[in-house]
Length: 399
Image (cartoon, rainbow, N blue to C red):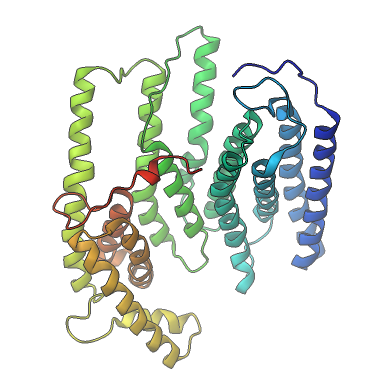
């Protein structure tokens, strides 16, 4: 990126920085007052929030000179709608950071971290789209978006670990990007060559799926076993992509090598073709053995018992179990047949997950059902699908 001629921060831009700082301060104070925490917990929550918000403001001030379009050299005087949405996401992540220093909230308040991180994820989709639609794509927005992506994932990973949902090995998800950047920096310090990354259709897609998984992993209703199985499915491809990218930038892997190209085609053949087909067969079998498909005529009792354990009345739990059965039928049957499988599998995760939450790892068929549904949601339905729509919109930036 060509550096702008005017490296100074124009006054209108500095004014917007001050307004951002004021908005961050007001948002943190108002949210903290609304939380109504005990004084000691409120101080700890405020300290965690303040550290992350101050870090973001320092980062914003540092990146302000990059507030220009890629093909221009003049610093823009306004932040634009896209950056405004990004900074709103930053405020939400700052509020989320405070929960690292206090015990997990109880009751309905336990959903607050989920709401904060989920809203930040939705805004992450909207900020780039808004910037492109308003012709305000800038280096500042790109840098802020990248840094907040890493920050958000790190905060969510730490919360999932601290809440006992998964082991400390899960920190690899938060550290992967930073280890990658540190590795590049170290090679530069050692005067070793750095090779360019090739384009990838799946890098952003897998990262988006993992952000979605982290959102669900924060749900207070999930058990450690359920999060662990989900992590095995969603996190593995993410870490493999980071490892492959490191081999490329360090020169250990040449993407143009004919041997690698043949190996890559075989991986695609199995990963996007035969593996999803095997998962669909596994879904057809385990949906029957787990009772998710009521072939015996009896609604799966696991849902009823689980909902009653959460405080639902017997009548409400029974009615919800009927609707969960309908949901499992109208989603999993098309998934098995290979009809709009990716999106229907995302919905089918709900009944499969609730069944697994009740039985845990002791139910091998329930674990296999959940893993197979998640795999189809990532890879789609593969070979012998009745209807496999083109999904180019998933691999390009909208707007």
